[in-house]
Every structure is written in C-alpha cells, then in structure tokens.
Amino acid sequence: IVWTREAGWHDAEVVPYGPIPMDPASSVLHYGQEIFEGLKAYRRPDGSIVTFRPEANARRLNESAERLALPHIPESLFTEAIRQLVRIDADWVPGGADQSLYLRPFMIADESFLGVRAAERARFLVIASPAGAYFTGGVKPVSIWLSSDLARAGRGGTGAAKCGGNYASSLLPTRIAAENGCAQVLFTDSATEDTIDELGGMNLFLVRSDGTLLTPRLNGNILDGITRRSLIQLAEDRGLRVEERDITVREWAEGVADGSIVEAFACGTAAVITPIQRLVGDNGLLVDFGDTAPGELTMSLREELTGIQTGIREDRHGWLDAIAPA
Ligand code: PMP
Image 1: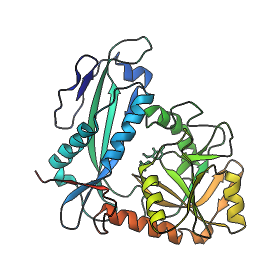
Image 2 (image 1 turned 30 degrees about the vertical axis):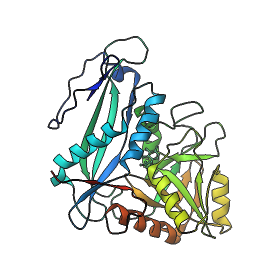
Image 3 (image 1 turned 180 degrees about the vertical axis):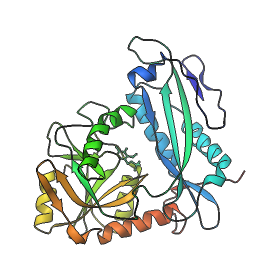
Image 4 (image 1 turned 90 degrees about the vertical axis):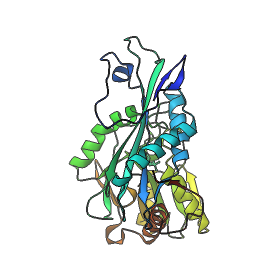
C-alpha cells in the first residue's frame, strides 16, 4: 500500500512474494528512512489461527513513524493487512510449541531525490515467514556480551523507535558478541555507561530472591517491547512486584554475588523468553548463574506466555486476534 501527501494511503493489494521495483535514488536507500515491526501468528490446538496483540504493533509502528518523519497508518489498516495476509498464508502457519508464522510489517520512504529531507511518498508492506525456535537446541541458557565501546542509541536518538538504523549500528557489536561465544549483545546507556538499556533484539529482566522482577525503565533509548509489557502484566497478575527503573551492570553483578538476584532472562517476539546464564565483557566474566539457570520463574512465565499465545491457556486479557478462515 502506497502513501503520498496528496492522496494519503491507497492502492492496497496482496501479491505473490517477489522483488519490488525500486528507484536507485529512492530516499530509503540513502537515509535509512525505514521502520518495521515483528509479530507472530500461531495455530491453536483446534486448528484456528491467532495473532498476538497486533494493535500494540500498530501503535508502536506509528510512534516509530513519528520519530522517522514517516506518515502514520490507521490502526485498522494495519490490522486488516495482517489479517488478509495470514488468511491467504494460512497453510504456512505451523502448529506446536515454538512454531509460528513470523510477520514483518515495514514502511519505507520511497521518493526519488538526493537532497536530505523527509520523503513525501512511502510504502507499507507486510511479508511472512514460518519460524521455529530463535536459538537452536531448545530453551538453553545463553551467554550475552556487554558492549562497552559501541552503543546502539544515545539520548535524543532513535533508540525507542523500531527503525533499521538502530540495527545497522548493532550489527558490528552483535558480530563481536558472536566471536566471543555469546548469543546476544547487551547495550548500556552511552551517557552513564553502566546503566543497562537492552539487548540487540530483546528486553532484559532480572529476578530477585523475593520474586521481585527488575527491568530497565522506558528511558527513551530502549524499545517498548510488547513481550516486556505482557510479562509485566502476567507477573503483576501473580501478585509479584515489578520495578521499572535504572539498573546498573554493577547492581546485577553484586546481586548475583550476594544471592539477592537469582535469575535473568531476555524477552522479545522472536525469542519469547530466553534464560541468561552469563554476562561477559572485555575484562572477562561479569556475571555467572552457573547451573542454576534457567530459573524457575523464568520458565514458568515462559510457559504461561507461550501457553496463551498458542491457545493452551486462557487469554484472560484479550490479547489474541482470531483470524477468520478464508
Ligand atoms: N528491543 C529490541 C531492540 C528489539 O529489536 C526487540 C524485538 N522487537 C525487542 C526489544 C522486544 O520487543 P517485542 O517484545 O515487541 O518483540
């Protein structure tokens, strides 16, 4: 579907997957004026298909659009595009634990010029791809790498938006993490250095021995994760305290050393919940849960969230959007 300043959104169509025409001077190719979302469609045991909180993705896409000077898209247009594509691709929605159809809605600036300004023409597209588990080998605790020199976002930057540019800056630190045997990179606030922001593609939670959950507050640098939000709700439903605040690497390391922090996990649409075993930095091991990972609360929240998403548990918050059969 295409947007122009004069005509607004128009020309919606569903076409077979394939290359799209692109002018070499298209502004997205030069200035990265692009935003995206990620969500999943699941098959329930009765065969019906649902997506998880698509209106939250629509809202977040529009917040990203604001920051990247792209047009807003009506929520109903967003959710209808998702529904139509999933309905057509219904045979590609696998069933079972850790299985889903991953959906990637995205918006690109698509006006041809070489000066630096916001484009007056944009395109919104959705593509789909069957997805299995994010990390191979089941729910295995992972090591993560603390990026001390390379930042993903800074104050006033685009850290809270889901735009390609944020990922462009996280690719090199992610490669360095992999070279050091780590599954993901952890970014800290570039201004304070020790205050934890998030991982390359996930939000972070710590669990205290009294069951309290700690997670970095939405400080303008990090993504307002839909999995993060959902887990805060599920934890509060259980009567657990959730503290959204600044957390430092030092607080994490000291808490593990004195036994007051007993679990850590990363969360996001792609990886759901992944237990963290170690935090590694330039100077070696910073945190190690050893054989205690994965933690009990980590796994029980994971089980509850995936149970809701795949229709095994009751959807008591009305998070699922049922896709009517074709
Ligand atoms: N932070 C970043 C940088 C991400 O890319 C993602 C994945 N979208 C998340 C957090 C988690 O967000 P969500 O739970 O909405 O997938």
